[in-house]
Length: 368
Image (cartoon, rainbow, N blue to C red; front, side):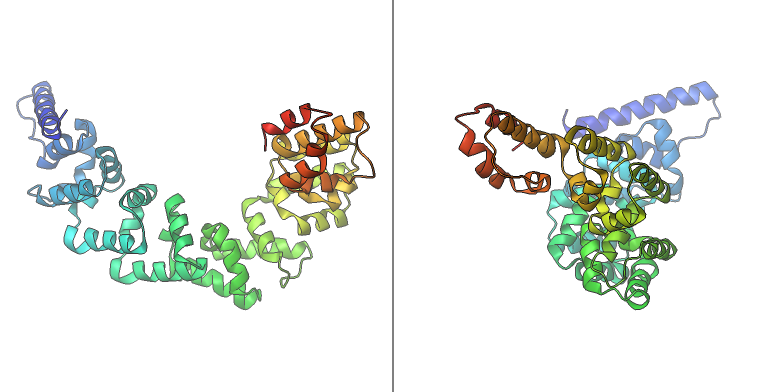
């Protein structure tokens, strides 16, 4: 249906419904505010929704400003569904000045390198990004985040995926956290930046929360000057105390000593992000099915982070078939079998034996 016919249909529908509502409530029913009619006819809201979202717009005496905002947004690729979401979030958005507010902000983000479609995605991910003051905090935010992430490309990458970190206060969150990590913890901005590049939200958490993470990392006995210290903080940011305690309890039940646990965390802290079920399943497989001792895994925690379906199980099936045919010579280390690259694994174990054991390629074809 052409846009003008759709708008006419909505207007007629609204007038019919409002007339019916007036008849149902008696002759003295008040005439709906003009913005109720506007939200129904121009934006596609129901009468009930329009009545709700029109309240912050009751001071308007014409639809001039809302029309300008809606036309501006549609011209930049925002759909009616996008507009309804924006208005539902903040109806007062329809009162913004296009020339002094919206247009300069859109130009700034376009100048940053966002395409029109990417900009729609960024705004819809977090409409509050349009709340940022243009001449005050917007340029400051762009400058600080570009510096912290190391490049404009990385800033754009993160803005396209999740934008809420960008709405956080530079003065209340980012700078105090940077000062704490650099001045009190002795961590260089370069090492801080490595973690922030992976997840910008790390540096916008409350400073008290960040201090608590440092206490937890200190309890592991890891020097703050260690290159792993920031990564431990990053992992602890994602792993609650309760989840950590659950992992520790389980691993101790398998025989891991405190020193083995500490050493494993320092080598590969990311295994703490596994769910308790995933950790138990992987340990059970290595211990019961493969025959590893728990201490062997404690010394090589990287094994816990390998994909079971795409790497561990297929590769060990290949090795098992070769052993059953007597085609393996010399001693092989499990860690080498599982951590060597796909190309090296094929070259070392599969290609020399593909004629004798044709099924080897079938095993790996689905995962490589």
